[in-house]
Length: 602
Image 1 (cartoon, rainbow, N blue to C red):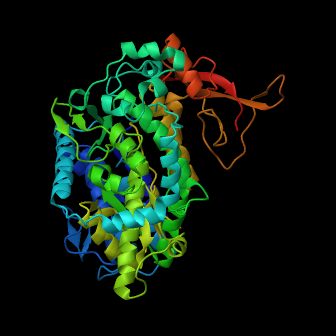
Image 2: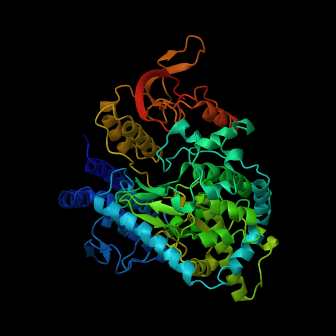
Image 3: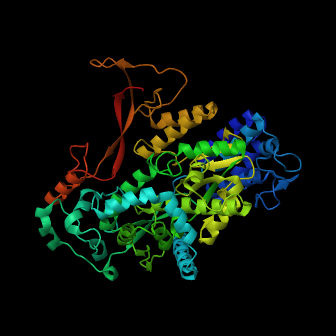
């Protein structure tokens, strides 16, 4: 099986040839440090090097405290020194933009970040630290709520009313008249129910029933009221807590999410669907300022910010875990039914993996269907609080109006915890964030230099410098279908960047696992290699007369999950389903396999 260091060597040598330097000594350094430190040098240490590099680009100078743990010579690290000297002058200042500067910036980031998000389990110590940080963040959120003044959210609520009054009015009406259509998400729930079993709701909290009665939302129709005799309606102090779980993120730290109780997730999904549609509607005042599906808007704004210097990209630390319930409810100060619905559907307690149950002060953990839309609204409101305060400070305006908000379209956008704001308002916005108890990740926020990153798009002076990530270890056989598919995807992304020597080396690795490995278009279902050369048909379909190639195709197996009679009817009434067997099989694929098939190469 090929090692990560072998791939790093091939990649480094090709990038060095493009940047007119040598990577021989750099590779020797990698071998030496991996021998003593293990793969964590590639997956943790080098990504940290990349962060210091990005910060240097942002401030325009290599600072004395950057690149800790790396030997220096003439002010620059010896490691990747040939690349770095293409970017920084003898005084450590960033050179004017040229092709070699941009190529070297990309090369450094590619070599340092390539393994930064590989899917490997974290150590127990790192997992424990992530849970500890989750608890601490919630505790600090509670401390903010307890210490805040009565007027601390007045400006926040006023501006939220300006931004979202149209959205909130329609959502309030939907909740009031009972037109919310509940839905389950694909993720885990606290009860560990899978697939269609989620529709046989056996627990419906008392506080949820007060706003969304079980007999209206948990049964297929009026004649099924008898089902309420089989359901528990626990008081708040008897409810099952959400279940805190860890999912892969990086080797440095896992992602902490919470599996919500099924009934809460069910109603969260219904409210979220309405809210997201309203926020993205063309009729909304904030249309274009919040996003949930299209990351390219953020990426293009980040590109503009890197080129023109007028837009900043901000990133939040522990974003979901620091939005308090009070802040979320303050969005809807004049909308009592929304406030009741949010209180009824949020988890009030969470159980950590070691069994500890904590009372939540955050509005919602990741895992709640309402986490991201409410988070986006909270952050966007805080951004405009900061903008208004900056305008008042300059004497330009007393208060924001609808017209002044519209004028900022194209300059403000929130997508999760990726935030874009005008550069001249950054300090004021960050100050507001801090006053609400939030943490701006200054290592991933940029506004002074020519580097910007947002939603997976990284740019320097308008040029794309986003590294391709190696997500999974090399597959040892065809049985490891996800790893094989990931490796093919990585190879094709590398090829599209013009790193053809590396792609050629990867082809030799892939062919040992996939004997059938044809040239295909990126849209093909076949695991094959993308090429600027045309594909070659191996035969023609006898009936449809289109070309076919022989290759491996991913096939997933949806787990068996037979719905009960009432649960099946409820599921069918709530939404349409293209799969005719959705009442027999449901949920995320339990197995992903590869089969040798004849398919079109496009």
